[in-house]
Structure formats: C-alpha cells, structure tokens
Image 1 (tube, rainbow, N blue to C red):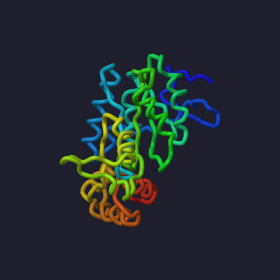
Image 2 (tube, rainbow, N blue to C red):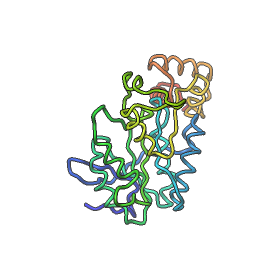
Image 3 (cartoon, one colour):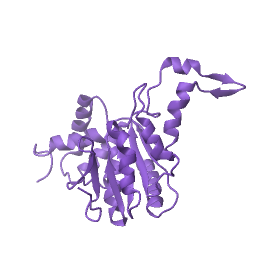
Image 4 (cartoon, rainbow, N blue to C red):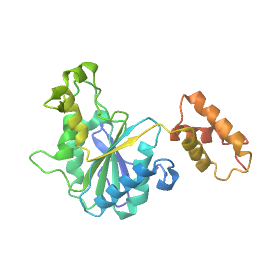
Length: 258
C-alpha cells in the first residue's frame, strides 16, 4: 500500500514485505527534552533547517558512546519540523540493499525526507554499504535533492579497524598515509558531511539530566541524586538513557510527587 505522506510523518521499511509501513504511534521526544548535548543539537538543527529550506545540507553521522541521545535527537527533529514538510523513513542496517528502491519511491515528491539508520556499522568483508554509498553520493544519476541520510553508530568509521591495518599505515614524506583497507573504511564515513561526536557524561551532567526529568519533584533532592548515582552504578555507567531508566523505575514508587 502506498504511503499517504499528507497524513503520515514517518514510516518503517519492512524488508520481508519489501514495503514501507506507516508509523502511527511516534515517539513524542522533543528537542527541549534533550539535556547535555547542546552543541550536537544546534549543529544538527542548523543542518536540518537548511535542508528543509532547500539550501545545501549534509548527510549526518552521529557517533559515540551508547545511550547519549543520538537516536533521540533525530526523532526529536521530526517532531519539531514535520509541519514544515519533514518526513522520516527508518531502515535497518540489514536492509540497506533496498535503499535505492526506497529512494526511487520518494525522490520526486514535495516532501523532505530523512532516511534514518540507527546503530549503523559493518563487519569486515561486508559489502552492503555500497548501496549506502550510491545514495550518499549518487552514481550515474545524481543523488536526490530531497533526501538526506542521518545515521547513528558507536563507531566513528562505521567499520571495525584492526591493529594490523594500523601497522600497515605509515609516514611518507612527512605525511600520514593510511593502508588501503583503512582508506576504504574512512572513505565511507567521510561521505557524511556532518559528523557529530557523543561522549560519556560526567556526574554533574548526569544529575542535570535526572533533574530535567524530575523538575516537579518536591522531596529531598540530595536523596534523589544519591539514588540516581546508585542506579547508574548498577547499570555500569552514566548516560541520558540511564537517567531516563531511573525515572521510569521511580514512577509509582513514592519518589515522584502526587
């Protein structure tokens, strides 16, 4: 069934049926909900605004530590700009071979599309990223003007690098020259004109995110922070995701005000 983009903000690609499925229950996260990533938020916001206005804009790669708000930031953009013609299509990394077909269906529409690939990475020897390259830079046909790819990854270069590959790189005439295998991997990430790094947060930043969730809390704030720190220790690290999970765990346990 064809997607009616007048009434649909987002869709998921279902590879087993080779079709898009409209999303009706969209994650309501908003840009103002995201704390501690202001630099990344402003950079992606400017790029997306340019894209919507028909100005030159880059594909974006959000990479770094897990649970730091990479995916939430992209979802929040849809909620902030859908009324200006922004639409989103999410595709799993294992379905990237279908990217050209998806693009063919949306490239001649009046909407501006973000193709969202969450947790993007490739194993050694994998070749499905070639379909991604064709959309990023085109082939004999120019890439679509109304489509940009926003991807998240835990890896800066999307593909794992081995110690041997780094040994094969060297200094020639005072300049660093990467081994061929490393060059191929870096070239894929380089096709994303906007690369935003996300790092693990410190305790102060973590507690600021906790406070943003508990803005109406009237109890002992120090006890709340102590419980939040203990929760983070049990999870093995601090992140925006951990703060959200702490909030979820506290609801209904007499931590929140009536």
